[in-house]
Image (cartoon, rainbow, N blue to C red; front, side, top):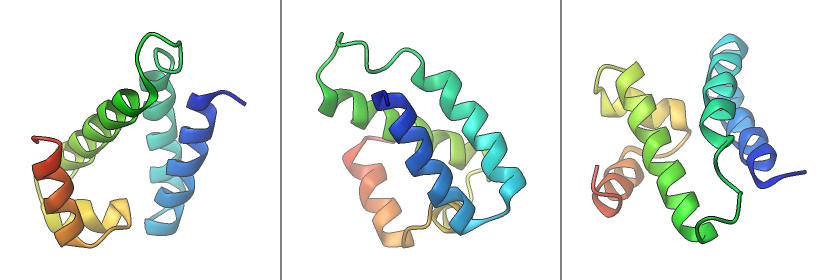
Length: 91
């Protein structure tokens, strides 16, 4: 399995746990399109993971119209964790 495939599987499972399977399928398509450029060895893995996490959080915030409480629920994390990650990732 590639790095991208593992990340898609991980986040799809998180999404299914947090919401409907239909939403998870939509997120999986989005994640696959974003991950096709990663794992190519062009950047260190930590930088790629941070960039991926930043974009994923931005995408979820966009789909929830900026509602941080709903975004944290969909991400399956506590709201305080989302706020901390947003601060760390400069979102």
